Image (cartoon, rainbow, N blue to C red; front, side, top):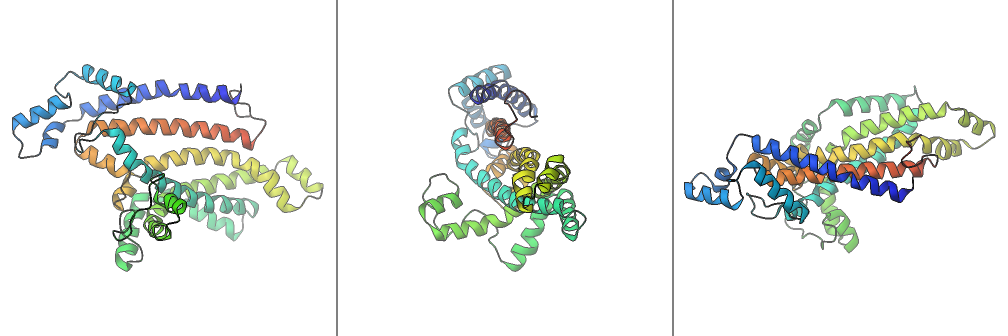
Length: 341
């Protein structure tokens, strides 16, 4: 199967995936006890005001009618409107999504930049002090909840010593860079805004580090185990017997094959980073999708919650697709649609 046909097939799989997500989230959100119209109107609102909101957002109609109207809107590119902000959900997602993406990318860069070299060193020198430190770090990373570490960092380091900004993406005194991608670090580099870049870097440092610890541990362990397995293969012994330099054996022959399962894990971890950023964003008051989801859940704002679920459904499908394509580049023996080995 060619790459183009494989990509098309995976993209078409989005249709049943998104349909299932929409049915599930719509059903669950409307079974939650509470009156979103009453919460949106406020405690001082009259019954007439509450009924007006119900009619405006079609909450007075049967659930099946509401769902049909919702799916019809999705086909037109209308993801509904937030009861809380009174803005289209698609516009809110466009505003909040870049912040979450930037945070997840920063966390993944930290995890990969530390985890892969540490895993390689641990695999090559297994049993050494490097290996012991690597395993200790991995154990710490998978054992410590990210939100607890975030709270500890916020109060023990940021508040106590005041070394870094405590919340937000930029200081009030620093204007944001010209909007290109809506990711401040990227936009400040593209526009040459050094003040915004360093200020944004200070703001994202601790949230990204808190979020990166779990994937860092997983990447380190996966790379270590893969390197140990690959280094024991016959072709590695053959390469060494031919007199190839050790760095050539390690990086050209061993690491490339060892990275295949690591790449798969990184793809899944990146998706979970974005989905699991809710608590980190709440602790550090990071204005991303996670904080937006928390506010929507507290006010029973159904449309944003369903929009977020659909967005993450698309993201996970595309991440799986990108991971499968990366397999082919790392191992030319892989044929799309015929398995991975």
